[in-house]
Amino acid sequence: MPTSPTFPLHISVTPFFCQLSSFLFLPRLPIALTALFLFAGSIVLPAAEPQSERAAAVLATVDGQPITDRELERELARVVRQRELTPAAFRQLRETTLAQLIDRLIVSKYLAQTGFGAKAQEIDRELQRIRKRLEQQQLTLDQYLQRSGLTSDELRQSVAWQIAWPRFLEHHLTDQNLERYFQQHRRDFDGTEVAVAHILLRVESPAESQQQAAAIDAADKLRSRILAGELTFAEAAQQHSVAPTATDGGRIGSIGRHQPMPEPFAQAAFALEPGKISPPVVTAFGVHLIQCLEIKPGTKRWQDVRSELESAVTQYLFRWVADRQRPQSKIEVMNAGQKEKT
Image 1 (tube, rainbow, N blue to C red):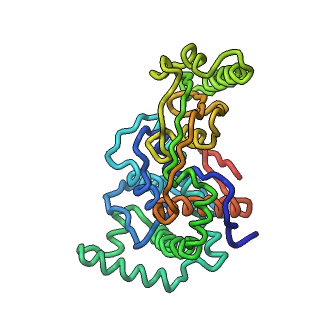
Image 2: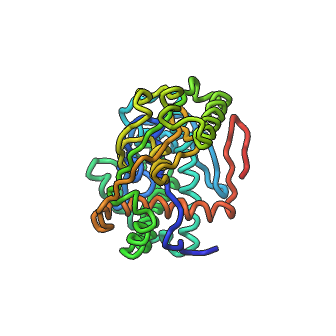
Image 3: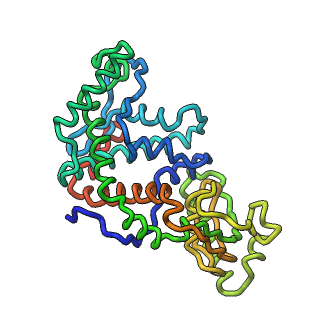
């Protein structure tokens, strides 16, 4: 297995925090989610909130290493905070967060195998710093573990991650790699704007796969009619779109890559050339057809968007490692009391 990703990169990346923001109808959450999983400049301790006495339930294992419901609840609490979510959005967030925790264990295994993992003495040194920080709050480490619901093994794993992952990033987030990534994904970062129109077909019950499939099929047939010249995109929007823009032929105007649009919509729009029409695109609003009307090139250099590039490449690296390590990992997900093996 290769021990280093290949640059330049030729794939499009959908950051995890963009995926979440798409279905939560929230502004993107780079700080909360990226810090949660991928960035760790200093050791971050979970809040020492009192926990119930019940035993933790194992939700999944990676090579025998468990992920418990308490661990998932801690991560969800840090992401959700005071936001109000619908039950459907929370269920989706829970599933996505569990998948991310599984991937983090997979990536941790890769880091240990390739020399980036934290050494035992490094973990012990950091735990000693944690003890001193807790003493300032008049807490012992054992008291902190009891209050937060953490085991000593879970704390060591968390500390190991927050040492190893930044070390891996420091090795790969070089100027050369950032510039190459920028060249491969220029439109995503240089301030380019795309003027678009869209047709929206509503799905009354998004959780119903049959309804969604029917809407996708209807959108696909409508796209074929437009491409065959039976009607124009604007005419199709006026006749079939349920969006407020229907009366104007579906015209939205110009959008930027990182504006608060649903990520699948923005990603599809920026992949189009002028005059082209996307295949059906599913968002929380329904099923879209998107037409690119005009591209207004941006002028930003890679140095101008360094922080955004670092975030995007970080997400890419995480996905790259998880995908390559996964075939070597034994993953078990407990589903309604049963195990699903992958």
